[in-house]
Length: 174
Image (tube, rainbow, N blue to C red; front, side, top):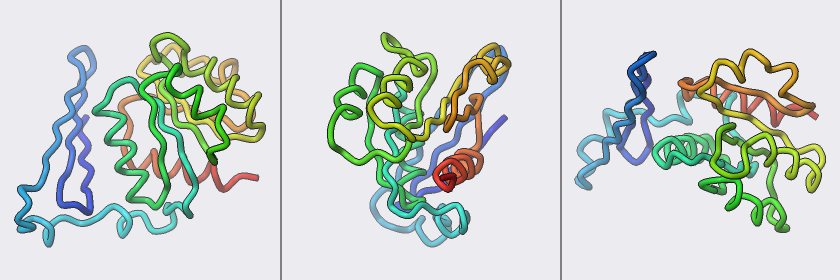
């Protein structure tokens, strides 16, 4: 499976994943001349109704390349983003007075896992929306037991269009 995401800055990322082989993330950055920009479309024009309205999304992902890609896509969709590399770094953000409308978190974080982080976040911020990302089919198959109100789950690899759609749908719920 392969997916490609374009950035308004002229760069793009290609993610390829094959069962049993693994995942490769390749980032293509512009050389600064601006020559590529005219030929590369930006995500906002492609997503229309999936655009954010300035909501703040905390992205908690220990894989820096995946975190960077998710943050970049969310920013292009007009979300404001906060980042943490694991649950331990996310806790001070969650416990702060900083506005947070949703959390996008890997389930399998080192230390404090994504589910435990969500429990702490929801105790501090009732009504917070949480989207879990997992690379493990076993977790995905037990969704009903794993997910609580205001929670959803996506299995890696996923398309950036699916991420945009699920985040928008979660934030649109009252």
